[in-house]
Image 1: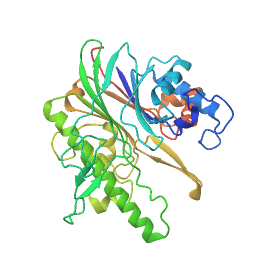
Image 2: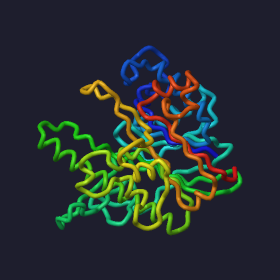
Image 3: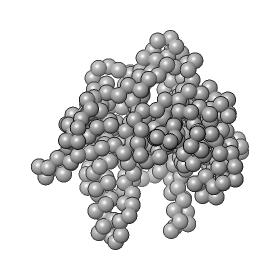
Image 4: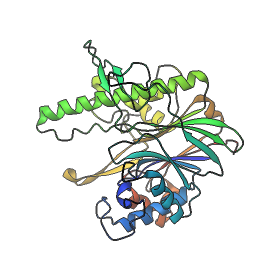
Length: 343
């Protein structure tokens, strides 16, 4: 079985309000990329992956006028993908939904949120992901009230042969200090955003611990917008959100080999899953932002991870059409996990 996570930049811009693909020469939102070019590139990438399930990060919008599921299912029909059904969880107002595309012949899935719903006052522990989490992050005797801008998607999944497991798709908030002006304001905003992201990571980790303590096979996947050593504010709080979700030195750990390598090697060659153009420096920045973390029991099912990086993965590099499609389709590259599970 192949499970993937893929952050698709500006996916929402490729559909009209009725969920139909905009296969035209209008700009997609990606720099100098038309909607038609991005759609065609995404078709090549999804078809090459041929995954049984894809956790789509930044999926098309889901609100009063738009619907994520028919949009993704039309995309799947256009390229004859096996992962032709879609599932979405709690909607958000960021135009960046978290959704699962899956092959219904291989998997049955349902949105299965855990935890209790809270009011505005929130709750400690691990409340439902569309609720409010109370936590004192800076030890000032005042609890912060934290919300997910993009509530994680909790999926109860079962293979055709009855193997049950859970997926949690996550997209933690970026730390970029948008709107701040001046060095001090930028620093304050960056620290505040990191505090919020770490609170979300702690909230997510508490849900993970509940499943691990129950012995539930679990996969946590998505874009955590963070990694060990990614910025200078990590030192202020001690750990990255990736380390928190993994459970480094804290309870039963999850495992991702790319995260493990990055944690062991802060200087030197590291795996990367995203590539961004930095205009001020006239160059590209690469980072490891996308992860597929598994519970200890799933490591016994011969897991094989792969980042579909157009320059680092030989099989991607040696297929020009795929290499160019990966560059055109998004600023992130897919990550896949192959598991020997009953299908």
